[in-house]
Image 1: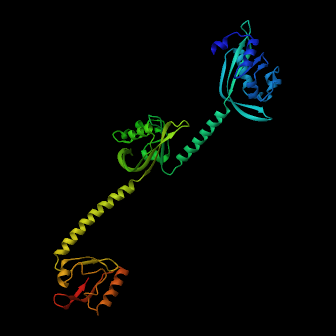
Image 2: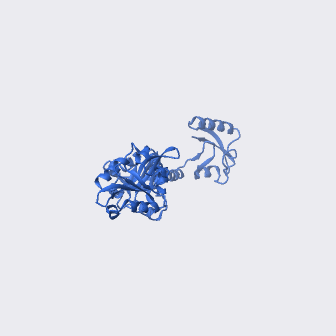
Image 3: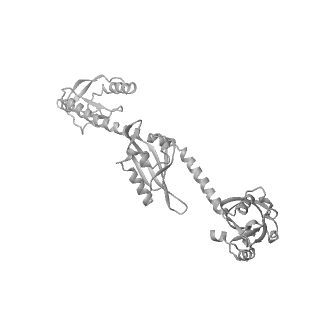
Length: 370
């Protein structure tokens, strides 16, 4: 291309070339940039007819007067140095209305037979659709990132195979025990304490195979407040793809469930201790000479020791839940039920004297329940 720019080609040859070329081309001659030639492609881009040929550029396209293109053309005409523009915004009057357009273009000097610049050639390609698509994508990504930054849970985006931290909201920064200086760093460098833990490898696997990874109550050791601490998280690693379907980043969302996990562990230990306590209680009650029993608030027996079986001649199968009438004297039953209800409602001690039937002797024994 540079050889073409520096070649001394006559305007007539260029005009013939431009008129037959399949791309948008124009030849602007002299200091006033008279439109010497403009093929159909560039006329369509300008939104003009062939009537502009022979006019100075500023007359043929008056809408560009206050735009940057005239000054760029003058620079190329004066210095002989080509100019390449990429995705440059241009306002053109097309179809009777002003439109915002974007162009890739090249302004190249044209020389006369004495080696002096006497014009500028224009090669242009409209890229408006591409630029607008990129703008929409960028806007969509911006909204997506704003959403993630304001999320109620820890969120981060790792870009590329090196897992560079592209985004991390305040919750994730706090989770890591770091500050915002880690943004832009590879995750492995930002959180060196992850060495020996599985997370870097898991992320690399997601980047390679494209499968989302989810975990529940996973343990992670992080250096927070200057010391290595253990936390538990529910989290996901989800691949992010570009328009071509290629993975270029990973989205990490996490919820701290450390309190829940620790609470479960405390409950498990308490249950074990309670089970041991119950076993000790039963062993003690079985060794006592007195009758020992327990019941729920609605009167259902949950336990009684062997002394009860011995004194009353009952066994576990004969004593039905809530059915105490079979061994209590009928005259004492109303009083027992009344005292039981009051004790249950007011959470007070249950104390009552009553007679209980002894199957061995066939008589009623006098008992006190406390």
